Image (cartoon, rainbow, N blue to C red):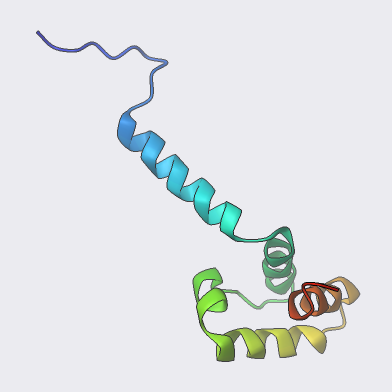
Amino acid sequence: MHAMTLPFQQDHRTLGNTALIQHGLDAMSAVEVEFKWRMASQGWWVDSARFASDAGYASELLRLATKSQSFALRECAWLLQHPSD
C-alpha cells in the first residue's frame, strides 16, 4: 500500500532545507544584513560566509564602508566594529 501525500503536507526534505535556511538567517545579525544590503547599494557584494570567517576580508570591507559617502553604511560598519557599544 502506498502512502498518500495530501497537497497541504510538506515533504520532510523540504522542512529540513527550510530549517537550514532559517538557521543561516538567525546566525546573521540584523546589522550584518543591513550592512550587506547597504554595501550592495554601493556596488560592493559581500560574501556573508567569508565575512564571518575571514578577518582580513571583513576588515577590508569595513574599511571601505567607513570611507563611504553613505552615513547609514558608515554607521553599520561602526556598529559591527563596536558590537557592545
